[in-house]
Length: 146
Image 1 (spheres, helix red, strand yellow):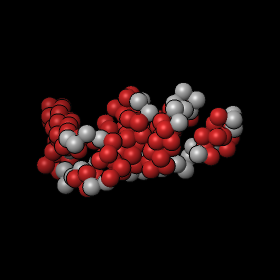
Image 2: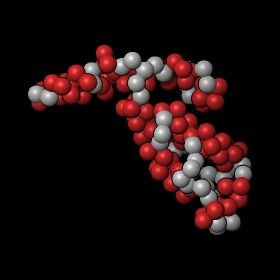
Image 3: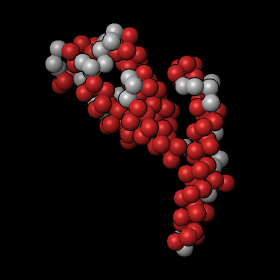
Image 4: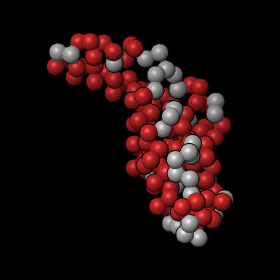
């Protein structure tokens, strides 16, 4: 709530932009939505979601994608989920047990992410093999997903 007050009272120097994680962004997004402050906070939330494309973990990316959903920022949602698919290795099932994410995402979301991950890596692998980059192609095949 402090961050929202700083933004509304034109104190951008007091708004944290660097050390904000996905959970904090989601919490702020829910408060912004609750009090209908989307327009007043748009510059702040856009900067958060844009800067955080260099997120530390897939979990942060998914929290930020959930925040983008709450804020109706579908472009950021698209970029964040795409980045999550590119960098994530393994199953998305562990995220299904997260109450905050499960509440905001449709039931089939994580299966769709897994399917798209396989598609992206398969296409990348085919493109690498077509160009003759065999070592790179074997590193990104869908079978390399743990």
